[in-house]
Length: 412
Image (tube, rainbow, N blue to C red; front, side, top):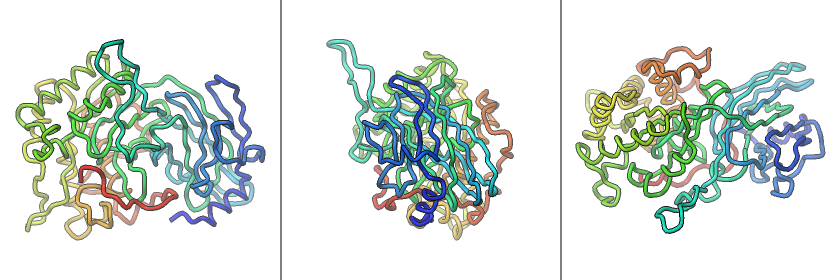
């Protein structure tokens, strides 16, 4: 756990402040964390600063919506550094960047920044000009007008940061609580871990949200938001199914053999119409074991429907349902709770370890499907076999500041 005294030590040691080299309307910003002039709390007037509620771990810059290449220099003159960097709502960007005393290293990644505004419809036309956010999303870091960076770890040692707006391909994520950027520890999803595995030449725009279904994603104008931004050469990863099967939700229920495939085909057609590549992802299973130690199917015919549409529409498929079975069964009934939220009491949602391993599954699925997207995967990432996952004890992602999650995700 990241402790306040460690954060305070980092602030003193690194003179955690910045000088901004930007003017109104600029598309690039430079901050030097040795300049005392910017040791301020974030305000819209300043346009940058530290989140006073994060014990100095989060630094934000007011920027227009878009994709930004972030270049960070790490190191300390006299102390070793160990820094993990997250962006927006806990998206893992850099994992444990270590520096020896007197050493500096530079790392780069791309952050997608968005707000909830949608291009308004023409006069008398149906639609709206904002995504219909739920009450838990109001004020979320991934729906505001700031680029937020979070520096955590045993010995954070960021020195400088340069931020530049860029035009790069984007991977859009459509889905539910198992994909979304979970905002509080210890909950996490594969969508917010996926960023760690891509080179600094591509962005990930995670539009998934807890409780969403394929229907509500459309009616809540989330799809309209995605379609207003997607361009030729982008990818759209689509994972629904956890909430779509709930007949007790009559407004959003879809039947596995008829309406569910029809809605999937509609999303595929919308992506293709705009020159983007759709990719279907089956939902991971819930953690329900039978007496033989095998995962039981809690999704009915919905995964099979996704597979069938993928074949019929000639769309790439990432079979996360099958990979999750292998992952959970490899850990077994006794150890698999170590991959789940709420101390393992939650059988659907994951912690940092479980989300990280499922993101590895998705990355492997990208490779196995021979997608062009695979060219953007970091070079040093080995192939992943979910039947032989990393040990839970081997992965320790530095925790984000703030209170722990107390509410179950929407739709649970």
